[in-house]
Amino acid sequence: PAEYAAESAARRMFAPVTSSSLTTIAAFLPMMMVGGVMGKIMFEIPLVIVCIVLASLFECFLILPAHMKHALIHSHNKVPGHFRKKMDASFQSFQEKIFLPLIQKAIRFRSVTLALAIGLFILAIGLVAGGRIAYTFFPGAESQVIYTNVSFTAGTPSERVKRFLDNLTQSLEITNQHFGGNIVLTAVVRQGQSSSGAGTGQRSGNQYGSLFVELISPDQRDFRNSDFIAYWKSLVRLPAGVELFNMTQRKGGPPGQDIDIRLSGNSPAQLKKAAEALQQKLRTYPGVSAIEDDLPWGQEQLIYELTPVAKTLGLNMTSVGQQLRAAFDGLLVQVFQIGNDEIEVILRLPKSERDKISDLNSFSIHLPNGAYAPLQSVVSLQSRKGFDALRHSQTLLTVSVTGDVDRTLNNSNRILNELAEDYLPGLAQRYALQYEYEGQASRQKETMADMKTGGVVALALIYIILAWVFSSYVKPLVVMIAIPFGITGAFLGHYILDIELTILSLFGIFGLSGIVVNDSIILITVYQELRENGIEVSDAIVQAANNRLRAVILTSLTTIAGLTPLLFESSVQAQFLIPMAVSITFGLAFATLLVLLVIPAVLSYQETVNQFFQRNQT
Image (cartoon, rainbow, N blue to C red; front, side, top):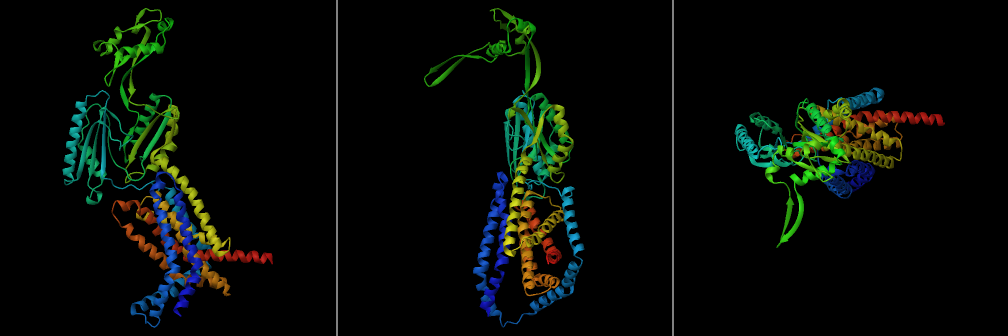
């Protein structure tokens, strides 16, 4: 009867289907352990998937059997159509003529089967380790925003900065017309400050200027931001006095630049030299742009040191400094109030006696004995270029060297690894400083540490679930062999489509680990039933693989069919999810093929080992 058939099917498949759902949940759940910015960005993905799996599990056993009952009643006396008959005949022919001989050979030559699978896994790992498949922490997508910053020498008149910004705006309009017009939606000029969206943060001063540009959506144009920036840059003529000029686009995803190296030390002069040397090194890499540091040069400074005469007269650095500050900067002598206003009285030299460097020659220092001495007789003055700002971290002076990487030309991880191996240790030794990675590299390190912990938790949960289902400590290991096959497919998929591995690719591999074991669970469940009915090991393995061929293929094809359209999506939003879809789609396709061939071979090995130990015990 239809009712009995639906109920029996639900009872029979309850354990394998439930365990398959739980392994999927176990694979995605540890993603919620990822902290920081990436954890906040990605938290919704595992949450939604877990909820969907739980809902589908509820529907599978409480709603689907009723639907199946009605479907079986209506189709009981129904004659299959011509198309259905042809499909069934074709599939049966495939099973008998192709799959059965193939699975028999896979078991017969099980060592070769397993060696080929392991070889493919090693090949896939080699593609990543050898750099054939590049790794980028977070996938980049075209932005609508371009930042342009310029920094002149300290003390540059604001009129000169304004003229350059006007010329920059004119060249932007020419670029806009070159690409068809109506490309630029907004252009905002800021004189006296740099943009906080590019490089190392916002700076203020007469020598700074910036231009904020918003373009139309990347979906509405046929050129990339790099093309727009390259043409715009070709029109710009830098006047004398420009210390820094860069154009960069806004980055999507977590904050931080592709390259961000923090140098720490005690001497600002040594830090600046090291930063300039590192910037020069970065310029040798193709695709690296917007290179700068956050230790900008400031105005000229006069550094004074006491002469031997000054020390014999009882002067010290503090007393000389206080007198110079009082004379040229002013000394607060009184504060009084008029109505609601506070009036400060500051005493200092007249403007005519403190507005030129030569005024220092006529300035006299008050000595401890009450006499006066010319400044030049008690201190030696040395001119030196100063710094606009100094930054500290953990009691040390720091400077950050940053840059952007065009991912079509280079890879930030490859550059950072090469610098760490060949350049940065020597730089640190030469200038007596320390270095560390910040920005995307720092977040990548934190995220990968969380993901390693999550990966161990996921594998442990999957093993526990499988051990519960099979009541065995060994069978779960046979099932979990499918996980490396899925990883092989994921890596090969990235290589075939020429897509970089990203953190989302790894998230996809996480989920894939829970999905690929599902086919193995069903296959081994059927195998155990056949063995309980007294069928010999090899025949039981072949029959289990053959009987579940249709179910395994349909399970994988439905998942692959659901994700495949995403691979061809060209919208900006989809670019972040495509690496995850590639991991799951190719990983599942590859693992399905290997599950049907390699798992039976491994199962055959496991049964041989069991029989060996049983013979020894008897």
